[in-house]
Image 1 (spheres, helix red, strand yellow):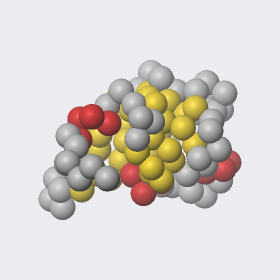
Image 2 (cartoon, rainbow, N blue to C red; image 1 turned 120 degrees about the vertical axis):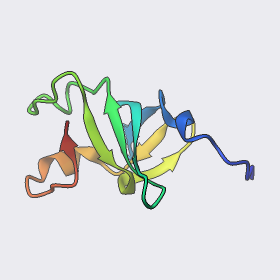
Image 3 (tube, helix red, strand yellow; image 1 turned 90 degrees about the horizontal axis):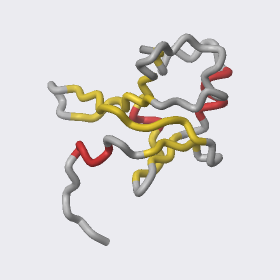
Image 4 (cartoon, one colour; image 1 turned 60 degrees about the horizontal axis):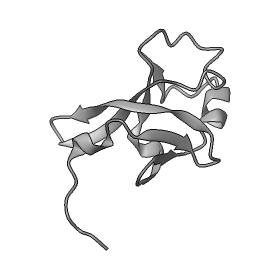
Length: 96
């Protein structure tokens, strides 16, 4: 396995899919906690209109908490966003 550190900016532009294979969007930016030097979210744009039709995302997109990320490779896999969106009590995601 290649242990070479990756630039955090290499995530920008990657497509994001749910673990069920549903296209979510494309990473436009990274949300960092500078105090702890930890990635805590992905700013996702170019959203799948079918997933976000009932949300006013405007032109900016959504922030996906980094703890939802399951794998990073040529694409980024996240926990099933469809189920997360259906849960009205879940305040982890933020439409920005």
